Image (cartoon, rainbow, N blue to C red; front, side, top):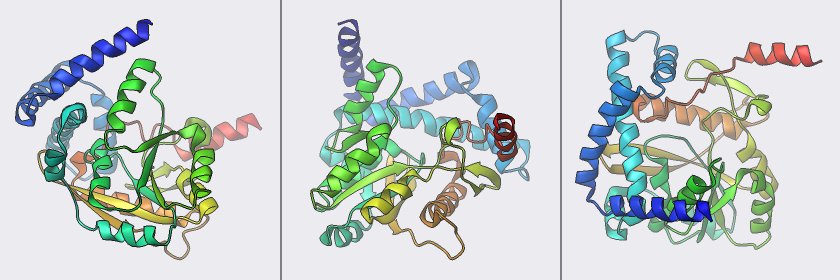
Length: 302
């Protein structure tokens, strides 16, 4: 009962906030950037550490400039996510462009499932709007990790289902996707696969952004079970509040090992990030564990 009351209060306040025009919300974002960056200093050490790791040749002035741009974009993402509670189809269509929806329609014609790889880049919460730019597949969904707080989890589920996407908890992914496959209908499921796997699943490693990096192969493992086509969604921030998205077939290279599609996705993701680094989620502790640390821990357990 308490959670229900709190949810109704919060969703009501957020919806009222979402009723404001984006040009007003961006003013609030600018204010929020100053507060989060200079006063709260939200994860400043983590962001600085990650940027210094990936760009060792850049001066501290260049790092700080990139850092501030990240926080400005981060605050934009927050208000843009809230705006999903009250945004018209016409406005979202103006702001989210998809350059080649026909590629997905061609795959869907054969009723072949699609595994969509993407990352925490630009505004991943607005990605759901791409389904307005193609006719098939009609079934679109994404894998997500439930938020620990039940009230916030319910709010995020409401926001993420704005355009009718199905939301699949990570632990139910295999069972749900196999059930979808049995319907013989085309469908596309998004996997945000650029962040660190759970600490219990640091088994696969590659070089990503010049760092030894653990990666999750869950999307490819599930894709093998359903004979999926693998596609990458490249996103570009054209200007504030406007995004251009492009589907790209993931074509593995020879010698990519057991998970060639995942490794190729990571190379494509790396290219996207280096094009405009400030739009990636640098506040995540991506390189909290090194490969050697994990190997040493495994030896101790044995």
